[in-house]
Amino acid sequence: MKTYSIFLIVLMAVAGGACSTFPAGYQVEPEDTPTGGVSPSPTPPTQPASTGEIQPDPSQPTPANSSMEIAIKKASEDLAQRLSIRSEQINLVEVKAVTWSDSSLGCPQPGMAYTDVLTPGYLIVFEYADNQHEYHSGKGLDFTYCPNPQPPVPNDPGNT
Image (cartoon, rainbow, N blue to C red; front, side):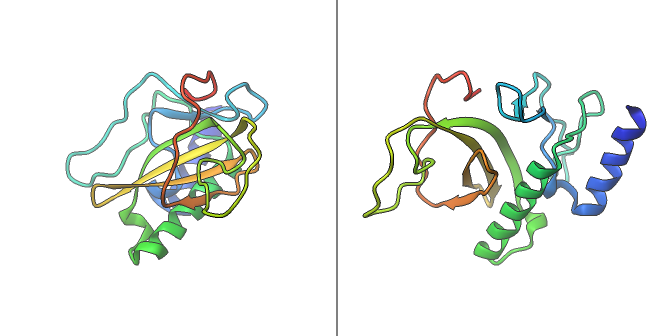
């Protein structure tokens, strides 16, 4: 297990550093768990004072869901392109499994009709220059930038 963790840490460092990994305080669980793959852990993140990058907490399990890591990296790269900056300048704030109130996934578009059904999915929150930016998805990890986000269903057990 220790060798597997070291391998994943090295792989994540080579694949792009902090923007392609989860912040400390989040761990990935198998997708067949009730939370859908991502859940907060009780340990707060460890941040160095100078760089602002979130460093992994060695006492926490290393993320193992490479599909989610790839989705986060793609979303970070998309945001960097939208903002005309380098993806390394973007901080990952939060990743969590949520339940959306309808099939718009919390990103309703004018003139569109959506099915009024609770929809499981994910929320990614990034921060750049004191502004937060959200990406939403259903269970398929196909994240979409959401310029005018709606919050997930409050007090839903999946939205922890």
